[in-house]
Length: 434
Image 1: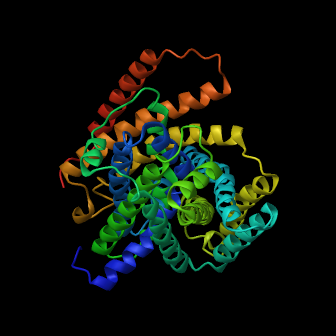
Image 2: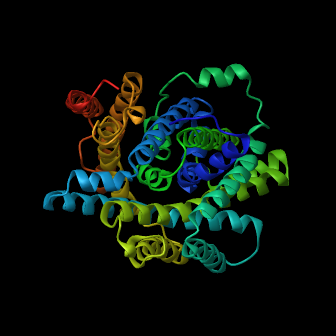
Image 3: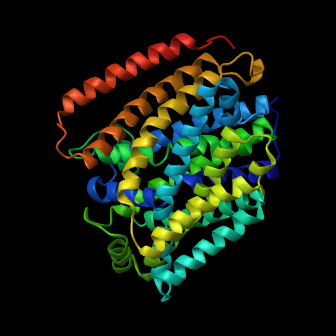
């Protein structure tokens, strides 16, 4: 049951759950948010506000299931679908999560190295090796509580770096208030999808349920609310910092522009923020893949425990993939496109299963199940991520097959109809009583 927490418990919980912020604030977030600020100034700030609130609700539900049942989300899924076909589904889900983590790991490594390049004169290969070695050392230790709190400290420093740059702008309180009203300027749809998609990511739900067991309910809720809100504020600060640049920016050009307009300190702080975003995500992406494997395939199996063979092989392969592409200085574009499509398909599926699980009377005591209001909020979020997911899949197909027809009206009619049918079916399966 929920109870009051002390200041020290609240601080410890916020630091612990900052691992979620560290996971979604990576170089992809820095790129997308900076691009949004450079192209549309504050007009897309609302998308980050929405995705921050949605992330808090989804992560809280995933962690609450783990606390109330003593089982992770993956373990529950594996038990619910324990037939041969169900086990195959679990394997496919694990491979999808692992592939997505591996694809984006290259960007994490390259982002961390790009930030270090601005701060030092060391050759890129050596910087890549240093970042990779630090990740291996932390993950090999198996001290995931320590890793979570260390990442919390890195996120705090990253936030200070980006906020220090953002506060130098001349925007008024009225400008920020107007930016919270949803608008879609011309050419902004893909950026809105990107801003939401880089914040609400499916592997974070497995991460939350994997590390949430054993926590107090009140401490978990406070920790997630504070940590994810901080992450959302940092993402918004990155967007605001991006308003200093032009739409065709690069990391070096934005860093140079900040240095020219605000002084060398701004360039250095932005570079540190980019390094922190890349380095923190370079640790959490392999860890999330391993935790997903543990919960979906190996709960109770010693080889899938924190220091077990398969757990280490999983995070090792994800990290090695990022290191390989980092050393080659290549972005694996086809793999990233495929990962975007997988993420687009996986997120609505995981969100729908989460919504069903958090209303399961057999699985959870009444105190841990959803209220009607919470269900309504999660249904709305699930509907939005369904549309987002189908748009991501469509974008990935367009990247691979440019000849595909681009009738936007038809696409959105299909999205709305398909999402509506999915939500009706989901709503019929929900238990609306506490």
